[in-house]
Image 1 (cartoon, rainbow, N blue to C red):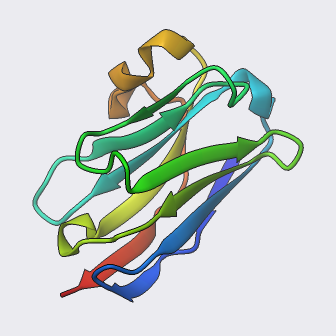
Image 2 (cartoon, rainbow, N blue to C red; image 1 turned 135 degrees about the horizontal axis):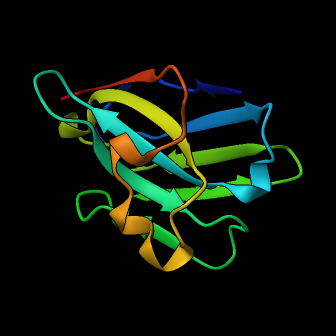
Length: 128
């Protein structure tokens, strides 16, 4: 199984980035998917999550609600994270992860140690 995240980079505050995560080697539609981030010296935290179909449910951390949008294309085995109005506090390594067990109604309960597969991460740096 491989999850390949891309799209990170350096952007000024107020700018936008779109992250992608391409999955292979798994039945993609059987997995809820999440985007996590980890800033230096901080724990890895769930940023956004999406249900298996992409139609039934999404979850956003309060810190990104209204600015970030998660989506998925099961035909392309890919999820996306559109990040708008970026802030310096969004600076972190962003990881995509796959979860076979968490039901759609409990996406906010995703925890790092409960995920089945991880991508390698992509750095997002927001300058002030």
